[in-house]
Image 1 (cartoon, rainbow, N blue to C red):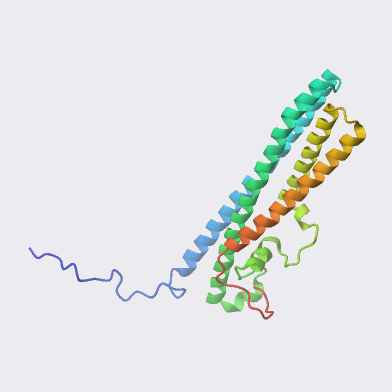
Image 2: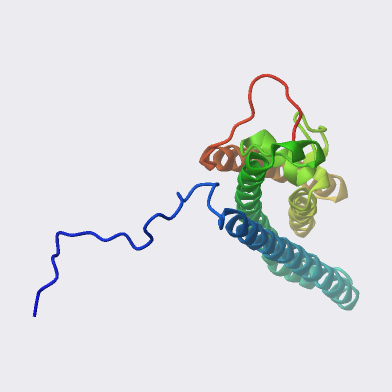
Length: 238
C-alpha cells in the first residue's frame, strides 16, 4: 500500500474564487454578521434598562422603608441608624449600576463599529446605494456616534444628563447627599448645617462621577481599533 506524500498539498477547492468581497458568499456572511451584531446590541440595551430599573426599584423601596421607620421612631436615633445602614447600600448599588452601564456602552460602541464596517463593505459592493444610508460607513469615534445617536460632535452640553448613566449619577448623588445630611442630623449639627453638608456632598459626588465618566469615555475611545476612518475632507456620509 502506498503511503501518502506528506509534502504534497492538495487545495480543497481548486479554482475557487478569492475570499474577498468578490466571493459569492460575501453578502450572505456580512448580512448574518450584521444581524448578530444587532442582536448583541439589543441584549446590551435590555440589560442596561434592567440594571437601571433595579436601582430605581431599590431606591423606591428604601424611601418607603425610611418613611415607615421615621413614623414609627418619630425620626429619632432609630431612624438615623436605619437610614445610615440602608442608604449606603443603595449608593453602592448605584455605583455598580454605573460601572456596568459603562461596560455596556463600550460593548455597544464595538457592535456599532462592527456594523459600520459591514456597511462600508455593502457600499463597496454597491457604491450607488450611498445616498440611501442615514448611518455612517466609518468606524472611528465620529462614525460610531453618528450611527448610535444620529449626532455629530460637539454634542449639547447637557447631553450627558439625558442618557441613562447621567440620570443614575444624579440620583445616586442625591442619595449621597441624603446620607451626609442624615448623618449631620444625627450629630445634632442643626438643619442649616445638615442641608449645607448634604448639598456639598451631592456636588462632590456628581463631580466625581463626571470626572470618572470622562476618563472612561477617553479610555474606551482609545481602545477602539479604527480601520475605516472618515476622510479629512467633507463628503456625504452614507
